[in-house]
Image (tube, rainbow, N blue to C red; front, side, top):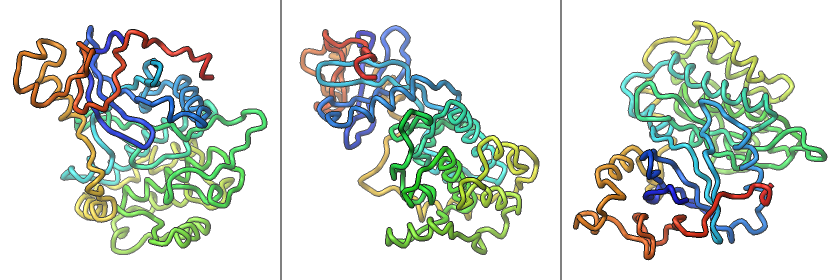
Length: 353
């Protein structure tokens, strides 16, 4: 990646790291998913599938794959950078929040997922953590991320029946290990809409077996007092998305025509206090999982003016660990992989697909 100016660790997962990178010519910021090739052994089909899906989609509410590079040791997915933070975090930070706000959020998700379904793509892991704000501005759009579990429908001899997704958001037919369809995404959107209006999940139990039993029975309630100020239209919308029978479930296209989305039935009463209190109670991040604030990181990188006169400031030397032999790269931890290597090149997708 000869155009890369600098990068720093943004987040770390079990099989990959995400770093912030800045392009030399434009100073544009990108998120780079760094995947060690040794971690892909035996899992090649997973990354091939994710790349195939990402290269097929282009939508304003879906995080875009900009490019792919590889080195002898790593695969690099250059992703569009979204810096506005996670959905629930932003709602908690707000001082005013209504049904109308929730309806507008869900409409964006429905638009994006309806687009995916029109291409025969099923996300299979829709959850709040995968819904990110594009930027910190109050009117920022929502972006869907993480297509690691996504699947193309209609592939020959390939019926979707793998139990995957996140407990609490998966549809009953997935838990029942029955063949399933894109309707599983519609169920997940119903669960997200439920949480957006009360701050807690429709299904919960410390015991996974009991949790799964609730989901298999589609057993949930609109509890008082949390739902007392929520419109009947919102409840009807959720009920129609969270139908146990996937054949009776609203499709995304149908959900977009529901009065709670397309009409004026969503209420404008401020429900922020109740919803944010429940969100903080039920979705607080564990101390070991404190997320980076992308906006703050970007601001920090620009303040340091990375890439120009790196050795001129003692402050930078104290905060940055330079990579040996990489004159144009630096990062915050020495274990971060560097893709400014002479033999790095654009990835030949024919070798991956």
